[in-house]
Image (cartoon, rainbow, N blue to C red; front, side):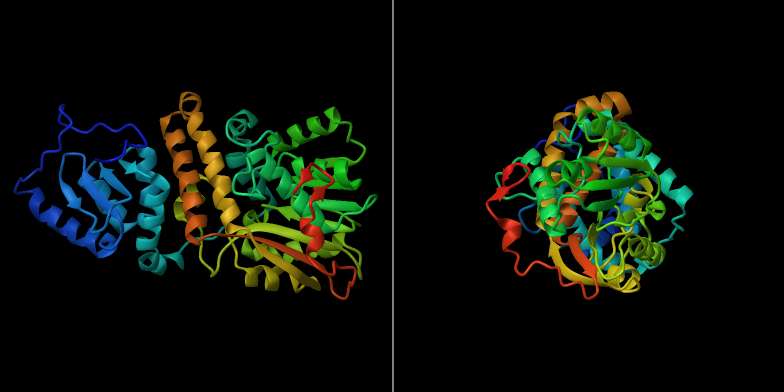
Length: 424
């Protein structure tokens, strides 16, 4: 018996039984579709059926899910352009997944990945101007704080959490992430910190409150900056944290520390030298340190065309070598530590997705069914990407070349007590 569908889908006839269609017109087409499906998904744990009852592909192994397609035109689009068509079909209601959506997407990515490499190189790139950065932020981050409150943690932290244990809750894990970042940055009271891409301000306020530093934080999202400024006022931290509704290229020093959490994905490869120049301008020569936290790849390739069109316009997940050679090396900065938190991001997305599903009906009522399905697919697909290793989450610590003020071991990163909230 198949698991319940993850989204409403009407399957004719009225009695709910799938009746195979055997007209002379569709038999040759179905034969072609079956051959194409088998060539791509023949080894995957997925079955494919049409809503009219036609079985197109039965999984040769115990299936993780059954993909139900509304019509033959949709299945042909999926075969011709899976990178774009999978998300579009799910969002439009032309496809549903009966079973585990994340596992289904993992299987689909594994099957399609090697076969779609030829058109990755054709993916268009956009120049990431300041104007475009503001426009892209409005399309994603300015959807409204109330929307993000439905499924993020209490402080609206929209980046990978750090789970001290698999049982940790989302709030605890986001606090642990901020604490870990502060330890990696080796913050000291009275130091000056520049943060670019500050989101709703949680990390900037955490650094000021628990480590006694002063922070200048920059962000292009109007909604996020307004929320961050209000929090600073309410928590009595306006004298220690200043929020600028401004692009990262406007950041000014001098500062002892430079940090960017979840912004590098929106910079664009062509602007990595510009980011390096900003870091170079902010940190004094001979000293200074920082950290970049970003979604990355093991090898260069664009993000999904669907993600770039519907979720993150202009986004790109770089490899470590692209960041090192493009931003850090030209600015005479030394990489001192790299950590990959890929599985922590998969767990973060699972927690977000649980909360999103609990609020799904409210999202659909406020934004429409297509929007609700789009964001469900985005969260599930992102979790699948990190679970499968298609996506990575890098934390890169760096310092001025020749700066010897470094931690001797990593022991201090994982000590039992934390200034912010106790146990890490």
